[in-house]
Structures are given as C-alpha cells and as structure tokens.
Image (cartoon, rainbow, N blue to C red):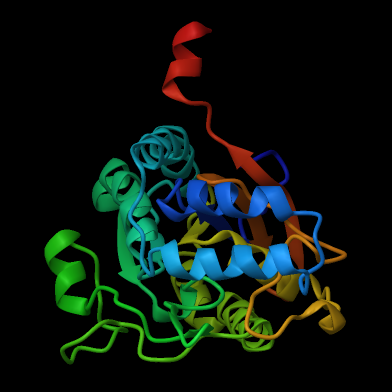
Length: 287
C-alpha cells in the first residue's frame, strides 16, 4: 500500500471510507431504478421522498459492514505499523456511528501505536439530516460525546460539544457549504498542527509519518478535489439534495476502501491510490 515513492519528509494521509451501513443497501434499492432519470422527474422526486422517509439519520454498520471493517484493519494495520516505526499513528474519525464502528477494529489492531480522536469536521456531506415538511433539515438524532466515550473506549472526544445532546447541532448541509468545509480540512492537513509530530521526530530516518481519516465517500471526493485544486461545476448543484455521481469529475471510493495521499512540506500532493479495498477473509481463504 505504501509503495516505493514515499519520502520520509512527507505527511502520509490514509483516507478510509466506512464499511457498508444500513443506509447503503436501502439507497441502492430506492435509487437504482431511477438512476438515469432527471433530478426533477416525477419518479426521481418520488424516490427522494421515499429515501427521506425510510433512511436512518445515523445508521450503524450492517453485518457485512462489520466484516469489511475487520478485513480493512487486518490489511492496513501491518502496513501502517511497519511504515510508521516508532512514530505515533494519528487516527481521526467522523462522529457518525458507521465511521466509529469502522475505526474500532483498526484502532484495536494498531494498539498503543495509535491515538484516536473524534473530529466534528469530518462528517459526511449533508450532515445528520432528517425529513421535515418534505425537505432535508436537521439536526437529526445522533450520538453525544459521552455516548461515544462509553461505546468506544479510548476515543478522544474533546473537539465535540460536551453539553447534553448529539454532536451535530446544525441543519442540512448544502454542497456549497460542504466544499468550503473540505477546503478547511485540506488546509488543516497542510497545517503546522499536523506537521509538528513529524518535525519533532525528524531525526528518525527509517520511518514515515501517518495520519488516518476514517470518513465518508462524498467527503473523500471533495477532500481530494480540494487537495488537488479541482473545482466542482456548481451548475450541477441541486436544491435540497447533495449531488455526487452526476459530477463531471468524481473520485469514487467503495465501502471500506482507502485512498493514500502524501503531502510534502511545501504543500505539494501525491496521490498513491484511490478506491483500494482489502481482500475479504472469505476471498483470502480461497487463495
């Protein structure tokens, strides 16, 4: 996974999409029959209404998703440990249930070689939204900081609201707002905050610095575009929905797949892979 082109001065970022959630097969079932319909068509609008009525605002992983998260951890942890050496691997995870569940096997596999922090800026495009009067609105029901600490021991929640209630307090997020947030995350990845550990350990010459973000498919698309300077065509934006597949340029990351990006000290970016999935254990057993 790391490849042979890594520089010891780079900050390596592994973007991880969560495993299959309860919403993923539901979305496929509802939208597959109307995938070629125009957004304003009657059948597409009917599908959207059904989606808003039946979806979960913060879905858990399916049984398949749990297996995908375990496979991902088994495939990724040895590479990260070997590449990072004695450096601490910093894992940042979206506060959604499906990303927290995906991060848990990886955190367990990395053990004391990693820290795990829940980051409120890493949520999926749209946020924790619900249906209200036929429109996307929010906030929907989600975990609070204390819930996360109880369900995922060792996950640091200091960036989340510590008052009672869910971590997400806003309304539905538009694509325009999501692009701004992705640009902010890209600036953070290039920041001195994340560079500090690498600089403090610059005397180490046989290991590389790693940050792992356990996040979401649409956010990975926007984040890669922000890092590469690719601008979305805003004419594709639609009111009251989020648009991914219809974009002229899309970085598609399947469930439990990864993208590996390295960032130089001057801010330059190298893309090592996008959309790579770990082989399942059932596949491995047949080899």
